[in-house]
Amino acid sequence: MAELRDQLANAGYGEVRTYLQSGNVLLLSDSAPEALARELEAHIASRFALDVPVVVRTRDELADIVARDPLGALATDLKRYQVSFLSSEPDAGVVERIKAAAGPGESVVVSEREIYAWHPAGINRSPLAMALADRKLGVVATARNWNTVTSLLELASVG
Image: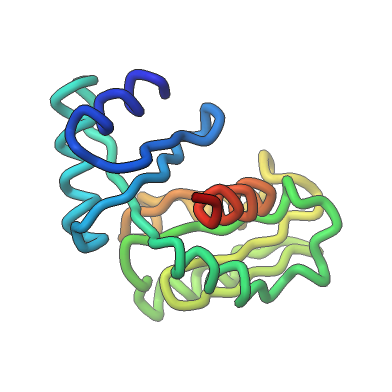
C-alpha cells in the first residue's frame, strides 16, 4: 500500500492516503469518478503489472451510502455487515437472483450502485456472499464491511 500511495502521489494526485492493507485509497482529483477509475487501473497496471478493476466513490457518495444504511438495526456484528460497491446498477434479473440467495437470517438490500448484506452466521459459508461475487453480478464489484465503510468516510471527512 505504501508503494501504491507513493506511485499515486508522484502521479500528481493530492492528499493520497491508504487505509490499512484493505486496497482502499483516498485522494484528491479533478477527474470524474469513471475517468479516475480508469486512470487508477492504468497506474496499478503500469507499476505493479496487475489488472485490477477499480470502483470509485466520492466523499459525498460515501456519506450518502452511510446515510442510506437500510440494515443497521439488524446488524449486531459490523464485520458481518457488508456493502458491495458496484461499477453500475445491476440488472433486474441479477437483483432477483441475489435476493433469492439470502440464507436463513440473512438480509439484502440493493440500493442504486450498492448492495447492503447482513450475514449473521458469517460470510465464509454464506450463499448470499457467494452470489455477491463480482463475476456473478455482471458488473465490477468490491465489498467492504461496515467498519471499513464508516472508517473510510471518517478519513475522507478529515482534511
